[in-house]
Amino acid sequence: MRIRGLTVVYKTPAGELPAVRDIDMDLAPGTITGLVGESGSGKSTLALSLLNAVQPPGRISAGQIEIDGIGDVVKLRGDKLRQVRGGQIGYVFQAAQNSLNPLKTIGKQLLDLGRSHDVDNLRALVAEAKELLGRMGLDGARVLDSYQHELSGGMRQRVGIMFALVLNAHLVVLDEPTTALDVITQANILEIVRDIHAERNLTTLVITHDIGVVAEVADRLAVMYGGQLVEQGPVRDVLGEPQHPYTRGLIQAIPRLTGDISEAHALPGRPPNLSTIPTEGCVFRERCPLRMDICETVEPPLVSGSGRLVACHAVADTPAKGTKATTGVSGGLTSSRVRSGIGEERAAGGDDVNPPETPTEEEQS
Ligand SMILES: Nc1ncnc2c1ncn2[C@@H]1O[C@H](COP(=O)(O)OP(=O)(O)OP(=O)(O)O)[C@@H](O)[C@H]1O
Image 1 (cartoon, rainbow, N blue to C red):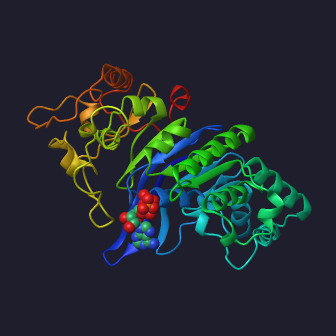
Image 2 (image 1 turned 30 degrees about the vertical axis):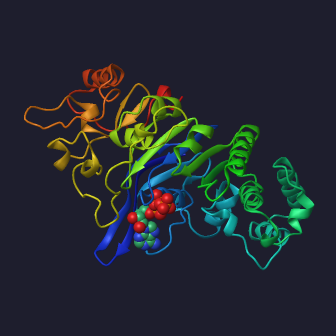
Image 3 (image 1 turned 45 degrees about the vertical axis):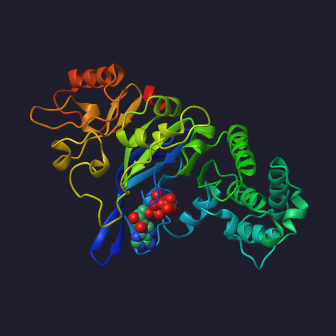
């Protein structure tokens, strides 16, 4: 999946405001990408766009979402769009454990899904559902005969995953798959996500505000703030050596089991909402310890280096003359790896480092 220039706006009393702005992102086949960010950063809006399922008062106002073999999802309408949803892209909704129909058994809901996708062989569909549920440690026949209130939260979440996969989707989006589950069930669900992803060679996007979840399952990590992607890269690199001050802040806010508890620092301030997202300059500057004058007016481009994409003036450049760089985040940000990556692009491409249209093969791997 290649997302280019994706912008999604919501109609508000102050006019249409972007919740997702000019996003470029690739989901490479066979990878699990984690998308993290605080509440309100635009994760669910981005995820719904992937199915062209943003509802009024929202709409996709610009961009393309190309999927191999399908084309641009943004342009799909009617029957074709309905077939792609579920058939090619499976979606496990936020709080999936509460999104089942309370008045119908799971089996009845499965048959409804099959009929709405013109599945001829409903018996085979039921067999596939049982097999998937069995694969996730459940008694398929019993679950299909149950109403949602007869199942635990973890069981319902597994039913949600079954619904996303039963039509053989190859691209799967899981929105907060483990929220509201206890830690044991959480670990269990993540193991299932990993196993089924590998077995079926899926392309998976896991949306979460919990970096721990991403560390468990993802190959790649994308960090979102104020409707924009501020850092992307291989999960180990981003977590091991975060470069954007927001990513660093998110990681520093996690309390450790070992070491000094006082080492965990909450990110100061609050994330912006639609009406307070800055319309020029850097979206993160209000909370940034490395804020410089340039951040007020110039939006930092997403710059690539060493397989990483980062949108930060402080990472991309030494502070320009006359700017006031505030220190406070140490290490990593000015690492020679980033500098040399950016330096190489400058040498090759002139003064301006523009966001790359397509990440290189090295970046994707
Ligand atoms: N139907 C809507 N109408 C107006 N604004 C909306 C609507 N849905 C979302 N928004 C706004 O869009 C922004 C992004 O919301 P979104 O739900 O995509 O974020 P999120 O990162 O998924 O948050 P959460 O983790 O809380 O679900 C927020 O400022 C939110 O208030």
